[in-house]
Amino acid sequence: MASDTGDSEGLKETMAALKKVGQRRLSLEERKKRRRALDAIGVPEFGTFLEQEGVKTAGVELERMATTMLQVNVGLYCNQACTHCHVESSPKRTEAMTDEVVGQILRVLAASPSVKTLDITGGAPEMNAAFRPLVEGASQLGLEVIDRCNLTVLCEPSMDWLGEFLRTHGVRVVASLPCYSQRNVDTQRGSKVFERSIRGLQQLNALGYGVEGSGLKLDLVYNPGGAFLPPPEAMLQAKYKEELHDHFGIAFNELFTMNNMPIKRFADLLYKQGKLKEYMQLLVDGFNPATVEGLMCRSLVSVAYDGSLYDCDFNQALAMPLQSHAGKSSRTIYDVESLSELTGAPVHTSSHCFGCTAGAGST
Figure (cartoon, rainbow, N blue to C red):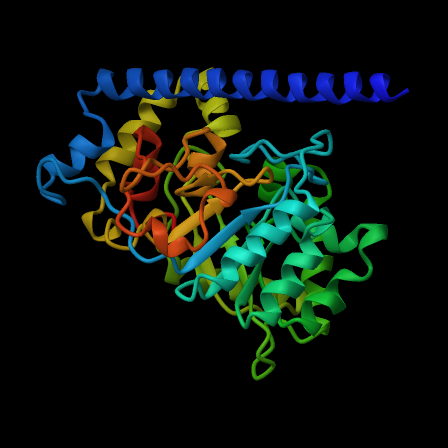
């Protein structure tokens, strides 16, 4: 029996390794498609483009500053399968963070005084076993905790504990709601998603989230339903507040707008529609040099469910790990004692980075 168990574990490890190789190949093919799109419009790679725009001096990489936020992707299981999802989460995904990785993350956080925020994402992060210990551990360390919530998770029968848990720990909820109209939301995220999202928001409001004076922050995130950039944030926030309050009695704090990243599902959609070149042109034409100083990749570290480290969640999706710094490779959470070790490291950039510098950016 011991031999059978060993063979089984060996097979699992082999399959996992093959899967990672496949993911790297897919990511490489994605990068080639974007590269061809940029070549067609005569635009260089992102780093060279920054030099030409005078944003950085020749030969100097975009460097990491002190890490103030740790973003943790606890797994890829989700109760939704949105067309714009850059990590390709769905109910069919089984990748999940282990207790061992959770423990190491909390140890590194305790040794990283510059970090003020733990940002937990997924999938639907709340449906992963790592969610609760991460929230509890980070709260004990005095960190702000953000839950990247899809809202419909609050309507799942097995998640009736969630709202009270979030309130007890003062978790800041940053929730995805790509529009205030049912048709647009359901088209992008699936049938009945808008209705369930409204129910989720009403549950959070009933707990005090988004209510003035409660101290419980509820922010919403908008991303476009197609190959275009978001409208001005302030204008859209005012419209969201008016529509959600007037029709559903819902209150929230702030609205953040995000550009759709030309990777994974959204990139596939653009490619099939023959719009990848057009969208890359839109991102390049919308380049805003004012966004570079505050790019999230400069002050954020992204941790995957397996403990591997990246400059951002988008690089994680494309299997582009942290680059070596000061003669040391920091590929996993086990390779660092404190995130201060990463200050000054070069940021790993590629053509998708135009998505974070177009318009108001995506940070």
